Amino acid sequence: QVQLVESGGDLVQPGGSLTLSCAASGIIFSNNPMGWYRQAPGKQRELVATITTSGSTYFAYSVKGRFTISRDNDKNTVYLSMNSLKPEDTAVYYCNRYGINWRGYDYWGQGTQVTVSS
Image (cartoon, rainbow, N blue to C red):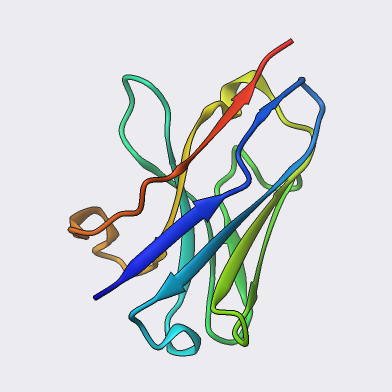
């Protein structure tokens, strides 16, 4: 079955940087568009960034220019590099496959906590 293991979250000061990793198994990773998502306390999970099988990327307006997404198909891993972090980036970050029905996915990993605070 699908397994997604996110890591790299931490407490960081505003303006700082972090890189998150997500190791996937149980899927043919190279055949799947992947996405990073986040959920802040009291809010719905939202899409942050996606990367297609060919490497094309999409970013939510709130993170465009600050975050980058990349993938290593040999390692079945997707990354999210985050720069110029803001307190409003505080959330639990998740990775998953990306599709138009992502809100209905029934499997999510444990996520990794990113806290931006001074």
